[in-house]
Image 1 (cartoon, rainbow, N blue to C red):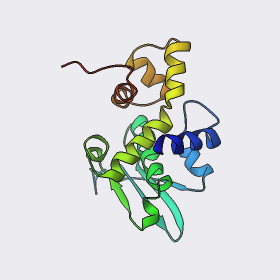
Image 2 (spheres, rainbow, N blue to C red; image 1 turned 90 degrees about the vertical axis):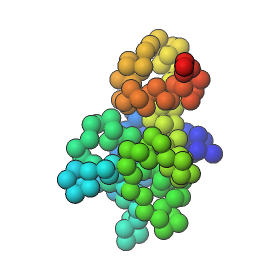
Image 3 (cartoon, rainbow, N blue to C red; image 1 turned 180 degrees about the vertical axis):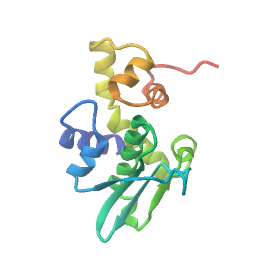
Length: 162
């Protein structure tokens, strides 16, 4: 379900590559706001909530561009997957992206990866455009190398060696 939801949004709202999650959110009528939590709440990366009937995404403006992009896509996932419709507010930290086992966080991470790095586009980049290496793929998709490595493992393109 998450994959098809992300794919539908990608097909409907993304008109450029790399995918711009902020533009997609805005096209969906979701307000995207920069925040400056660095001193008041340094562990906060982003938030998703509904304010006066308006869906809102907030992200930490001091983070790297690739982290901001993933945060916005992650928070968009909370909205699209109906997490915020249940009256919940999500305030996400880096640990939520990496290690959380909370179902809503896992789903939002999966959504963000599917949206920013669709399997069909990853395959096209690797097998048709011949883009090789995590660093080069991360650059092409405008995501972090860590996010790309996880995505490639999830897709079975690379395997972890112990």
